[in-house]
Length: 358
Image 1 (spheres, helix red, strand yellow):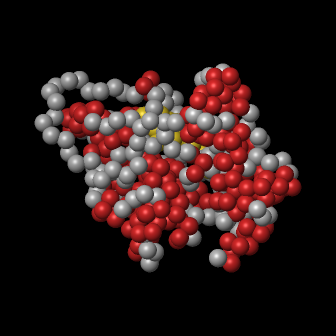
Image 2 (cartoon, helix red, strand yellow):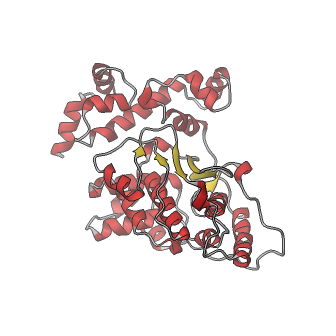
């Protein structure tokens, strides 16, 4: 599962009883490999898609070759477009064999309770995915929250839905109960096929939310798991701690941090630089200065985010242009149309028609 971001919610390393003598193989880039295999089985030539995101066939064939988070998000997006599948991430996670994750899965499966499983899944998730961090509440209802690290959240739908589907499936698998979440929220917008995702998870999903979060009742989450094995669990945690020491944390640019703070605010109006600075724990003046040091400014970042998202949303002909304008934070369609002409040299309608002909 994704790695833990909040030290306060981490259960911490196990007591030291000697370092494991060897590190088990670690599966990495599993979602990319699943998507590549799924697309290839559907007749899609994945080689040009891999090249576009800087990946080679050798990295797909080698289960231990590391695949960067940004490349994974980009490939999933391209594969979904090639397959015309709005639910690619959900579809991949629904049938995924979690034992293929290896060490990370087994340290979760041997945990005392489901809450412990999520806490440890968060702490050790960086072993298999460095781009998504998770936190889990220690008391009350179980709240598992995802956050993107070093990769822009607004560019993704499929990886986020993969993780949420995976969290629900693991909860059901470990408790051996058909758990229904109390709530599930996602930052990205709903698509026409989203109802199938909601039916599977068993609760209404809040899209265009402020955060990516799964909420489960405390009662089943704090019951002892039938598969709990304290001796195996402690041994595996030792291996996980050793694996973490060999994994460097990804560097995160200020631009990406700004983009990820803007993403949940964008559909609800023009994000103000003061609000973004506050979310990042700095003054507006400090944010402006640090962006200038990188040759950037807030307005430029916001403009590029809107431009990239506009092209992505307009590919979906089922999404009305007035809805696209709202998702990008424009109060009027005319304002969006004028901005899009500046970006693309044509109107949103003309771009959509051109894409349809292509």
